[in-house]
Image (cartoon, rainbow, N blue to C red; front, side):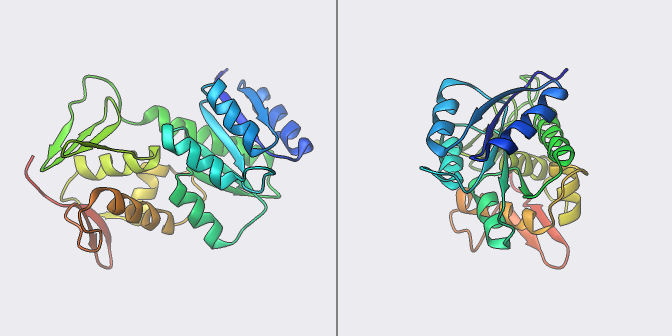
Length: 232
């Protein structure tokens, strides 16, 4: 029994109940919210291990809830929505969502994605025995899951950190988009390679002095990406 605490946020009571039944069957604990304000309150009162978040919510929408969550934590987030437009998925990824499920959905598929996200989080680099990486003015600390540039801490989502650490610890190695998907998102991920492009773009905005002329996260045209070989 996994026992992780899952926050399910949706204004459709039948969907919440269905998701609860399937999650509890797998041993997860579940708390609920029916609107954005309740979701923010649940986040403040509890420390869930993952949030399943609908976009179209009353009072405060899912975009705002996602931004509020990301401002203070790396909580894994699976977006749950009736929208399937590409722009909505990209916005969700840019806000820090870890996965994206479109309604109508299979409860078994949703549970599989929850398991995959939690598995990736638990398998991410951690522990005091792993030394921080120091590359020029960047310090990447896998034990504390923190990134410092100069003297400033950079706020990254869980996926952004995992992607950055993988590339930095293998600096100079060229990764295809498919390989990055496999390594960071896992074989069970249902997205496509544009997910990688979105996360690289977001990392450049946060880490690079000039994102249009990156020093760290370099594009290898026709192949993929690599972390520049700088001084350690």
